[in-house]
Structures are given as C-alpha cells and as structure tokens.
Image (cartoon, rainbow, N blue to C red; front, side, top):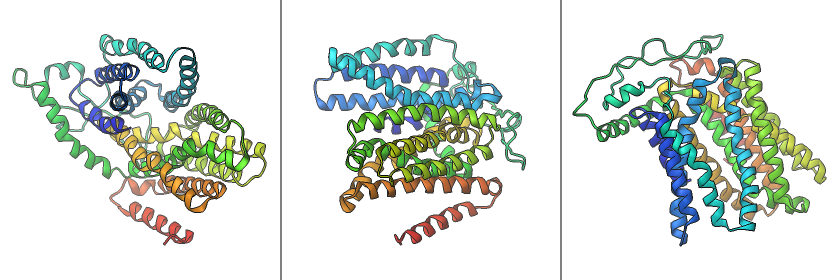
Amino acid sequence: MVGLLIASPIFASLAKSFNPFRLIGVGLTVWTIAVLGCGSSFAFWFIVLCRMFVGVGEASFISLAAPFIDDNAPQEQKAAWLGLFYMCIPSGVALGYVYGGYVGKHFSWRYAFWGEAVLMAPFAVLGFLMKPLQLKGFPSSDSIKTVRSIEVMSPSVGSETLKNNNRLQVDNEIEHDQFEVSIETSKSSYANAVFKSFTGFAKDMKVLYKEKVFVVNVLGYVSYNFVIGAYSYWGPKAGYNIYKMKNADMIFGAVTIICGIVGTLSGGFILDRVTATIPNAFKLLSGATFLGAVFCFTAFTLKSLYGFIALFALGELLVFATQAPVNYVCLHCVKPSLRPLSMAISTVAIHIFGDVPSSPLVGIVQDHINSWRKTTLILTSILFLAAAIWFIGKINLNSFYSNDESFLVQIKLFVANLCFCKGYS
C-alpha cells in the first residue's frame, strides 16, 4: 500500500514528459522484479521491501490504464469497458486464491511468486516493444522524444467540458488540449523533464482540488471504500460470531467475488444503456448505493443464515455496481491532461481515508460494544452517507460548474446534521 500510494501521483506527473504507455512498461517491469524478489526473500524485512515495490509497479496501472481504456473505447461503450477493467480486480482475487492455494500446497509458496512473475514478464516486455499508444491531452510520442521541456500555452481546440442537458456534458464532443512546445534539443535532458514534471504537480493539484465534481465524487468513494474495506477484513469473523457460520471466510469470499464480478459489469452496462454522462453516473451511484445499503443493513438484522446470505448478496451486487460509474466521473470531470492525476489521487484518498483506517477503527468499536451485530450495523450505515454525498453531487451539479462555493458548505452542514442526529456531537 505504501508503494502504491507514493508512486501513483509520481507516474501521473511523469506522464506529461514521458510516453504514458512506456511508463506502464516500466511499472510492469518493476512489478515483475519485485514479485521475483518476494519469492526469493531470505528475511522478513526483504519481503516487506519487495511488497512495497510491487505497489510501485501497480501504481502505473492505477493512474494510466483507465485513461487509455477511456480513449480507445467506443463512445457508446465507455462505461462498459471500464466495468470490464475493474471486474478484473475481484476475478483476479478469486483466481489468486485458487492459484496460490494449489501451488503453495503442492510445491512451495516461493513457486507461487515465481510463477506469477513468469506470467507477467511477457506483458512487461510488450510494454517496451509495442508501438506506444498516446493519451489524449498529452504531447505526441515524437514530441516527447525530441522535446524534454514542455509548456502548456493554450487550452484551445475545444475543451472536453462534458455537459449535460444543462450545459454540463456533451459526450459526443471530444476534448483536446493544444500544446505549444518550446524546442530544446541538445540542452534538454531526462533530468530536466522529471524536474518539470514535479514542479507542475503542485499546480495540477490546485486545479484538481478546485474541481468540485471530482471532490464530491471522491468524498463519496472514500465513504464507500471505508465500508468495503472493513467488510473484507472483518466480514468472516462477524459472520462466524453472529450466525455460527462454518467456513465463514469461504462463504464471504465467494459472495464478494461473484457479486463483485457481476455487479461491476452490470454497473458499466447499465450506465451505457441510460447514456453515460456525469449526471446519470451520479444517479446510478446514489441509487445503487442506497438500495445496496438497505439490503446489507437488513441482512445483518436477520436471525436466519440463509436469509442473511440472500439479502447480503443482493446488497453487494448493488454496491459493486458503482465501480464503473465512480471511475467514469473521475475521468470525465477533468480535462484530459489531468485524468492520470485524477485517478491517482482518487486511489490515494480512498485508501488513506477509506479501507486502511476502517479495519482498526471497526475493531475499536467492536472492543467497546462487544456485539458484532451492532458493529456491522453501524459500519453498514456509512453506506447511507456515501449515497447521500453522491446524491448531493447530482442535485448540485449545476452549481458545481459555476463560481458558487456553496457545495462544500452543504456537505459540511449535512455531515454536521448527521452527526448531531446520531448523538455524536
């Protein structure tokens, strides 16, 4: 997690000076070497270090893969393609359990890592050998080779303002950033390019922070991930204590993986079906999360194990339908040159404020309450907060594109009122 969170913004910043497709090749190479190191570990500190570099390699995909997919997907299937991409996470987890368990049992845990590295190696090589693709909003590959110092002079040729019926989004308009390049052939160097990438990072972060749609989208995503992270960690233990479940880890794992795959794919296809726009994405986010929260909350109130599994599965199916829409908003609420940074900062935020602190905090609550049923109900209620934040995003979308700063005030008032009603004030 440390490697992932540190390296994601770095890869996003370097994409302005180096071809993003080649950066993915670099990331996959780092990942492959790090996984080989995990299998060859001779001490605990060494495997921890290698795991950090696994996160560094993953960071290139986190920030750069989704913009590439969005660029190359058909206009009417952008959300579905994103859904297919993010479906790989739960399906990869499922495959990892099967593969790791089989290899570890019949050979050794070291062979599991080594085999994984061998499987990835061809993709790392292809990252350097294939003709590099180019992200929209960035200078061409030829420019990157010959020009190490890039100045963004004018965002013309039409900006991808993505309007709805009220001037918010027009999906059939494609955004391009016009770049004027200062030619510095002999004097420029990779070091200068790296330096300029990082000096522009603070400026880009300031622009990103002012993107109100991005901020409210990530706030909802953080709340959502807070619950999902705690579910994955504490779910089996809670299920065993509440329902005396045998093989609770297998049951929770199977439900999460199946619902994750089906729900993620469904969310992307549904958004395309209703026409993929930011307003429609917010509708799907708030609606699916609210209904999912209702089913999950009700599930933990039941005494029947079979009733719990049925309602919890329905709830997770709806909750996972948010994956494509939430990342669609992250990609389309900013100009093309900020999309990698948007994905990177979104990832950093949902982990630092979401699933990383949620597991220990839920543990503290359980130690204090000493009732897994009450603890899971408190945790699940946070999904209602996520749905409310995304609903605020939908009803205030017009003001987000104006100079009105009131949306932050509304979110603060909403959270304050929620805390007051809960008696936390």
